[in-house]
Length: 145
Image (cartoon, rainbow, N blue to C red):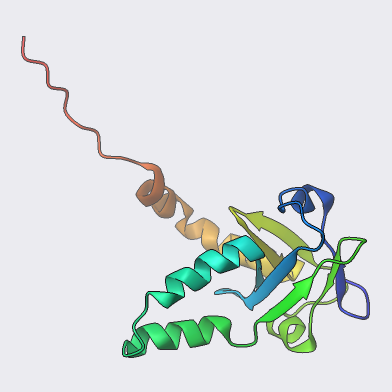
């Protein structure tokens, strides 16, 4: 990240973006101490899911409010750069060295030390998380002979 808060999106991640004259990015505070980037199409999907939450659903409205607090909308310039505002930089504890990570359809921006610490912490829970996510109960075979 340069002193003005500009970041160049790596070409391997930029190549995943839909082709358009200028792609908008929506940058939110992550659940962990990082920033989460949505492309315009993914953000529109997220907005559609927000629209299903009733205005009278206090918990749902609190979650939407919390998720979108401090959000920024940026556009990639001709060199594939976008800017972060100071509040987002402070939230994620970013400095000159940053780590840009593709996580499924999303992109995250991390302080490298924070990312390493988070991986070590998550590693302790990884086996149980993987079992819950990937293991399917083995169905007894229906072998009547």
